[in-house]
Length: 538
Image (cartoon, rainbow, N blue to C red; front, top):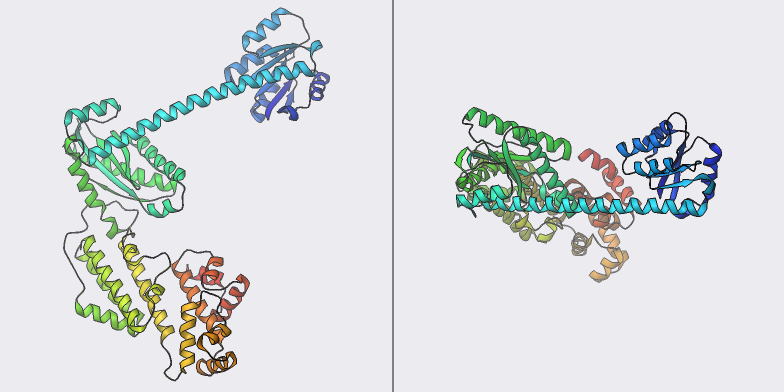
């Protein structure tokens, strides 16, 4: 629908135009009417029409004056002129001023009105098409240059281009605002980039990266020459070019001020955080690769210092560390005896040692792999299926590679141990339980996610269901269904604590087919609803 504004001081003429054709059937709608040019200007501001039909002879501001105004302020609007005068001068003036067409009122009919409206529509769409083509070409040129700049800077910082003549030529060809002398590098990486990427479309991620680069470019303009580029996976590099400036104080202040501006801007406008590092100033652009590696090594300190930080020194060394036998035995004993406090105490001690001794990242990964091995070993000893101690999406040894900070890694291992202790608690039987009760409990623990029933378990064990029901209640003090529900609620509680799942999905995950029944059982077992528990835990 194209919006049309009618301007005429004759209300009868306006009414006649309004009823002359079926507007909407023909792709038009009347968005307003005005009695003179001044009133029309106010209506245009309010309704934003694409076409204006205006009389020429009107009080206050006539049609010629209105056409003049629209040509200057709203050149995209198409104008159709009307007049009761067979005066060539009026026709000539309105057409010269930019009217699409001119109709004499006494010859105006449905056919002639539709013809001029369609002419206006065609011109409007043609112009929009040309505008769209122009914008597309501009966007393509901009994208091409952005990609070329990104490729050039990536080659620079990774040492793929080192010949000074080639570097200067590319700087000139890409019209980059940097010199080849007296430079510094800032490197930063978006926090939780992988999580953001998993929950966003490629188009959204492209927009995010472009927004970060635009923010950096605008901030750079306020200080010194420079260029910014996305390196990979949410990591960006800013190349500062200080030219003839030699003051170390000025250079350092400029870098830190820029970092703080970028840091606060991406948080405010994009709702993301990042960690930053920067290199020492260096004399020649051909050395950029070495100083990039320096900034990269410093940025690895994010693992120790956490997110949303500016890191200005190396936080780790290449020192190697491993678990000694006493620590390993202590953790195994704590797991076997289900001593959560002792486990937390020893994990705190181990992870504190990582920081104080500046242990290398590779060494930390190896120790965490040892801690996973301990959990697997204890699970096997007790007869617990190893798969049960991990969340469905966890691949144990690759999970430790995905964490961006030491705190995240420690939390994951602690939750792993807590989960194992819960499973040990379930698996430990009273020695006085009958063989059938023990086997029924094992069956429940291995199949609680499916639609388990007393009859199914009895058939599996080869006994009568009434006999199994009576035996189970005598041993456990509660009925089969009540025991099954307690197991399911226990696992639901762990999922709510450790994973971001909707409660309906939690219910399905632990074997409840009815969401309402899940709420009732959860409340019966824990005295709070799942919603209340989630709110309290968070």
